Image 1: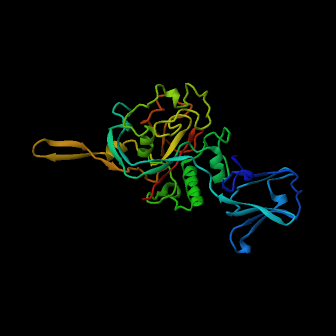
Image 2: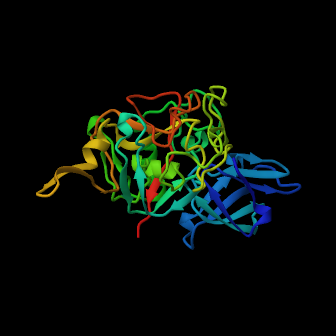
Length: 348
């Protein structure tokens, strides 16, 4: 967990799960006269007292507390035998720190003319919203801070969370939105689950958003890496195990592990002929007869409330055939090597 020393700063921001430390010499022993006082405002009824025995660490040389969402921001005072002269302003931020970046709206070509049938036809897609997206797949540390549990089969704080269902990922998004004070995107109810795309809360990317982000903002089938191994953990280099997020090279949008490591859930339900059924239309005129033309779609998403959802990017146990920008797959239940990253729409 990140650690912040009160000795070094006048004002401190402490994210959920972070540790706040005070280092000194001959700190008075834990007793009723020695405690931590957090003044929230002028109303003394809102003050919070943390008894010395309730601190995570209280020794002669160190005092530590972990932000576990129990505290409010305010002036943090160490009270030693009623002396309150030592104080700092501490901002307790009761959600985890997410390393994210902003991606601008764009139009790009989605699909692959030489890919599998469900990757065809190639079609133009307009993404009309700017997005905030996490640079990394959601780690087990972040998932545990939000959900209070870690379902992964291979444990490590910096490893991507896995062995989860689509509903687990959607519930994570809703819970994180609550921590941020944002309206949740998903109304979960099994086969009747719905998505409110007008909500500003956290969500899984749509399949179209995911493909654009994975391509680094380019309309092409191949990565800018000289070799897939530069940017992805797949069966040729992974040892068939998941690895810590962010080790491989990022793409041109600054996103890590878009291919390989763990496959990633999208918001969409999986429909094998979604491209061909949605992005082509039949027209006729007196000169050329009947013909098919491509339709440009704005912010497309296929959410039918079904139990089969899109997963993208391939995983550490799959070959390069599956670790492609346009390769589509799906799952009905949790899998060992499926995780997710999250986005939210920038409200203008």
